[in-house]
Image (cartoon, rainbow, N blue to C red; front, side, top):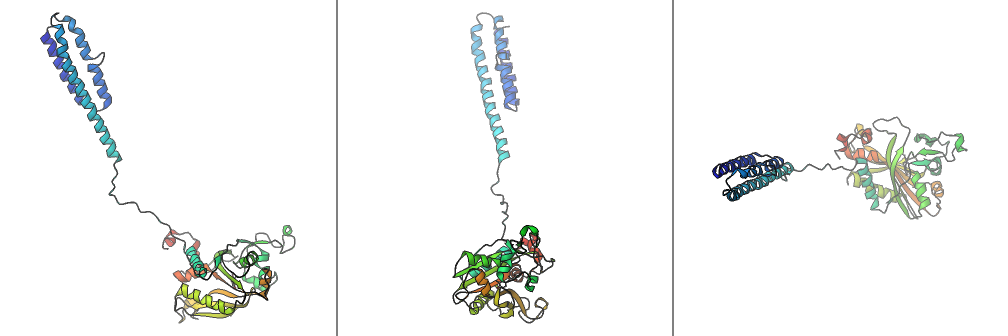
Length: 356
Ligand code: DAH
């Protein structure tokens, strides 16, 4: 082999190497190409290993021929590596691209349950008159739910409250019939007894919460429902305070022009007792099926706290008088939102709940 043939082989190797480099598609095939041409057992070394066949005077020139070719291939490999890396980066970035101009996903916001909203509105109103919310338990004793409220065991008024007992009446475990019997409160009124024992007059409390009755469920009766109880005890409290307070309440909840009236009522724990009516929200008083053609709707019961109840609350009825009222939150909400079936409140149907 003479130098010319050697130079021709070198230049052919260069072309093949550059071609192979151009055709690589990823860093690992590039490494293979690099090893195949420039590596320890690569083509260039092998070719240079054959310079023994050259005339002795040509050998020193081999380096001058081979070095630029090695450099060309090395440079091509380095450029290709850079290019492959930038392609890989572009691919990765394309996958991670975030279009910040896309419209956002809407946040699903909850809203207060209509009963909670109504309860809070009631509490806000009476809060302006100094009433504080006083929580009272749902599991009560027969004593506080009935006896202390002047409703003895054999009193016919018990028929007004169909009760869910947690222990069977007269069960042997409870000893004497009414002592320690537990029940689900049938109204929030036992909160009055607790409040009178826990606080001292002047007191103004509002007891909201869930109540239970053994009822056949229909559009206007639930076995669980919600009440708000109000109690104010002070010296010189009168029926006039009750009337004024409830009038303001009716106007705040149902409009300033709403007609109101007191009717005589009966509750064992108040004397006198009243039913508080507002002008029918459906016909505005002219008479329609919703108000039994009377033009009036009863929204709550109220009265002056019975002296026996004050005494059971540890207070002296000669010194203190109390006014009390109790209303169904479900009923108030139904009237405000024109809902005619109370079962929707606890049915958990989102189509209904999302409207509030
Ligand atoms: N507790 C009565 C009921 O559930 C409602 C009630 C009436 C509460 C008169 C009162 C009141 O505080 O004075 O039917």
